[in-house]
Image 1 (cartoon, rainbow, N blue to C red):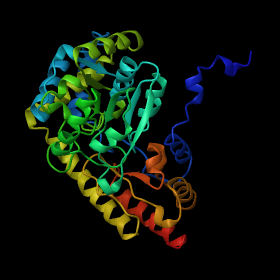
Image 2 (tube, rainbow, N blue to C red; image 1 turned 120 degrees about the vertical axis):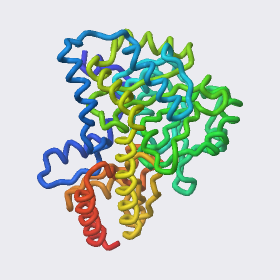
Image 3 (cartoon, rainbow, N blue to C red; image 1 turned 180 degrees about the horizontal axis):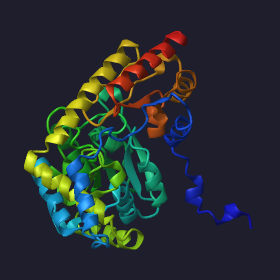
Length: 392
């Protein structure tokens, strides 16, 4: 028997990540600037690191309960209530290995073979593959810059069939930086209710919203009862490597996720949970001042990048959250893939082709501005030189 015959069919059919290819090249390219990394360039605040160190010194290295430390789950629910007006119970909250595990958990918990899951496009690279691996069928909702990359009632209505089971919402959005306001979310609620859809709301960038406070669809009357809310500590607290997130869900979905989490993961790392608990405890005490400082810095960088791309004739949507810009490169006569490959080869700047985030992003590239202003300025100089070289 050929070795490929042992490989799961769905795993074999998965395409490699469109992001990782460029990361691998950059790691071996001297003098390259990467605008591809989706993580804060800030160091985890000392008080958070210290909490993990103290837990280790006390010998707290054992497993926690499957759902996570009780005090952390209580603080998560307090945090969601105080910051975003969302009410979930600690007993229906699971601490996960990053928000990534939470996405996988909920999809495996709800997908039966052939179930259709609506996935906004462009969006985070993992959604469609994880739907596929769970046995479901990802159905793209093609969002555009002309409509600020939001999901509309018409998009839901046109894409839904009797097999549609859930919709993924991811705002603030990676890669576009789009958000959905309270009014925009309220507008899609009747369509969601009409079609009896579960909402999977990935709110990992909730704290990085530039135009006022983030609005969760779970805060809109009655929607918490049909919403699985995913969040974590990576973006807001500069804790990507700690791998700690959480998911809150209606009781029946929570029970299914809990069983999968028990068997596959058991629990998130204990020291990371102590660090996450410190992030919330200190945040309650100082009004999340460190988060506010990071957000203001990202907002400044985002404005710089938008102005730079627009001045080059590369139409760029102004992000209202997260830390990415998603300029169109169509005016250069190239699609995102060719633009990214040439830019890396000629000028040693790494960006991510937009089609890594879905077909709707084909004529775009994603640039992360989670790096220093000095690096961003140098990257823009090189991009400017590239655009001039190709005659734009």
